[in-house]
Image 1 (cartoon, rainbow, N blue to C red):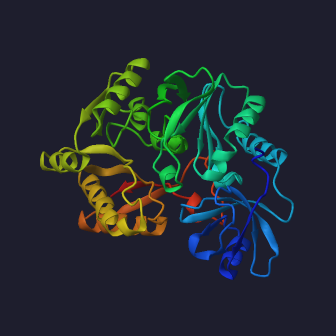
Image 2 (cartoon, one colour; image 1 turned 180 degrees about the vertical axis):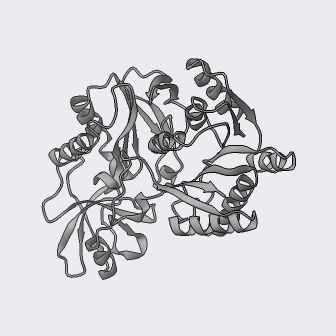
Length: 392
């Protein structure tokens, strides 16, 4: 079956048309007037109420994100268009990373390739196809990647919850070639073991790459890295600090962090298991002080409904961090919750500063790395916020 064959169409409301014309690529179920007659259609023609063709989109009958626009105009998309989009995405990253460094080659909607993610770990690629439409094009995507990148193997990490919303089964495994469970990558001279088969995201937190390098410039003395995962921030700090305490609730992640430390012959990082909220309170009670505290928690607000409780969590950890910072200490604090805006995040930091009786200077406002670009017309592509702050 030709995955680019258009066998059905979807009519959207005037509100949906306006949304697309403003540059957004998603149409939600509430703005779909007429569903496709073909219940299995994954690539459909999109028309307005007057039957004018708007473009073509990935269709997911079970998802609230019913359509993801893939191309504009009357001409249907082709394999050549898919190849051109992937090639352009790869070219945008040219020169940003060395051959043994890891990076994101394709960032879904931000690269005009809805729900397609491709990460490079040295000679290996990890692919995610997160909607019914991109899943139907998976074979084409792999063939194009084999030709353009010439990897030693392509691994599929389609075991994320998002696919369930699309009615897709979680799956992971090799799609082509031979891919080891983990591979060694470097980041600014530091070596890491990336677990492509079972690690967070596709094996490593690639989006924090530039924030780790920036934060390390402020490191000195005694540092605390909270939610350390496999030690990426901590090992960068270790090169400039006397000691680093790295906290995480996952024993498995901490063991990987210790392996990464041994790989670099770094001996001044203490990886300690524990709940970060409890640990911060205990450090405060003990009177411990740090020159730098880093907070890189998982997303507290995964849905809009959880935003208010998430705000309380963000304020709490930042309040506790400020209490254990020395005068002139540095706070590196992050949020990967899309639903928490940068402005709202900064307001929480101001509240935490007032409650801890500190003044704060904002030294840097940062986001995700350049291989995770933001599509300006789609705020959903801007999820990572990072502040580097001096506490007075």
